Amino acid sequence: MAQVQDLKLSLQALCQQLLQLGALEKEQLTEIQQKGMNGKSHPVQAIASHSFKHPRQDKQRIDEEFIMRHIANEANLEYFTIDPLKIKASEVTPTMSFAFAKRHGLLPVGLTMDEVVVATAEPFDHRWIADIEHINRRQVKIVVANPSDIERFQVEFFTLAASVSGASELHKKQGGNLESLVELGNKGSDANDEHIVNIVDWLFQYAFEQRASDIHIEPRREIAKVRFRIDGVLHPVYEFPATVSNAVTSRIKSLGRMNIAEKRKPQDSRIKTRTPNGNEVELRLSTMPTAFGEKLVMRIFDPDVLLRNFNELGFSKEDSAHWDAMTKHTSGIVLVTGPTGSGKTTTLYSTLKQLATEDVNVCTVEDPIEMVEPAFNQMQVNSQIDLDFASGIRALMRQDPDIIMVGEIRDAETAEMAVQAALTGHLVLSTLHTNDAPSAIARLLHIGVPHYLIKGALVGVMAQRLVRTLCPHCKQKMPTNSAMWQDLVQPWSAKAPEYTYHPVGCLECRNTGFMGRAGLYEVMPMNDTLAELVHDQTDLSVLRRSAMKQGMRSLRLSGAQKVAAGLTTIEEVLRVTPAELG
Image (cartoon, rainbow, N blue to C red; front, side, top):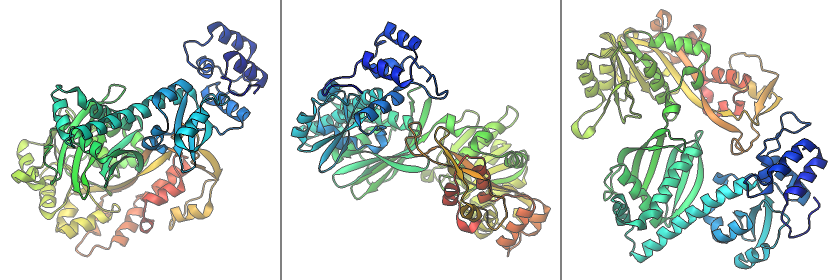
């Protein structure tokens, strides 16, 4: 690009470049010239605001990324996609002031012993470099990024850094008692805790924006790490000074009406807030004392995520039909099995939501109540008053229920009460922690449920797992790795598809290649053939083979179906389904 050193980009020069490149037509150029900067602060934003399609490439839009990639190529610099989860904002923001960054349109995105990596949308303007190199005693490496991204994350990074810094300074002045600030702030009588309020607000909004399911605040000796779980994987997000982390934790505990002074015992609570688009979201809080202070985990329950139809959850037509038939019984027990975080709660809530019509009484006993749902009558167990699952079921039985959901069967007494409820004309739904569907029968036997009661009460079992689904915007087709396919489907024969899809990474999926998760299901309806195999010495391998003959598809075969449909990868299915289940 014909630019002079230390010169900012101009709208006219950019338009001429894109015209010569064949990315704009003369009519489009005229429209841009008529509207000028169109209310934007950067010429690239002004051109992109028209949302023109590329005259020669149907799917390509003349957006900021297209233009900035061209500029980066002309400047012989790297084009950089800003992923806030991969940038240590607490490390990079001290390299320059917010005012300096705003004045020159910069965003620090990386820091090493030798260099500061700075993103800019003005790669030919180098007047700021000497100042940054002098202040940081490091060389500057320039990368090119979209101006809108730079503006957005300037505010996000530096505003948060200012709040953290302000809270730290306040702590020094007050001799370390930051917790008192939080209490004052709750009464609205002290503006000084505005920093902590800002940090907590940012933490929540950022988690919602990044589709996080959990927020972890983990204290260490001098700092506290913040991590988000997104699509089942933990990502580092930020590091707070320990004192600031204590105040943040105290504020969140206060919002959840927890005992701020009690730091020796684990506590549980919940709070409600709203996402940026106005949806109400519930967060479940859990604290735990550690060597360096309280660890706080917040699980996010978004009603849009928790209550979904079976197609959205990843059920195939066959799985959905089997599950629907099992849960349409008026009596009996239906079990969902799988490890923690495998989506059992979502399946049960979505099922109950469909079953909870005006003519039935749906009651639940949970530990804790995952999400308050007006269509159910929900009860939470409370060990302090001896209200456990078993006594909870006993109480529910006197409430004229049609459908009972028991959060988890953990012991013989709970199992016995659930089976009794199932045998006396109630549909009972519950969960177990087992690897697969047939293992649920072994687990019930191990707990102490007699085999004849299992035969009489059990309607069916469904095991499930969650796999990350490929980003639809960037997934790439490749020939199937036949050896890995065989690992996936063994010992059953299933023809390998000619092609499978693989993750690539783009702006939409934060360069992970994945977006969202879907369920893998192993549905085992009980019938007379399987019931005959249930006795004191039940052989699980025989039971499994018989269930497969009856039409049950294993978790891995369920995964293979999703791989063949281009929804996930072989590696992802192998990761979440243990080999012994194959």
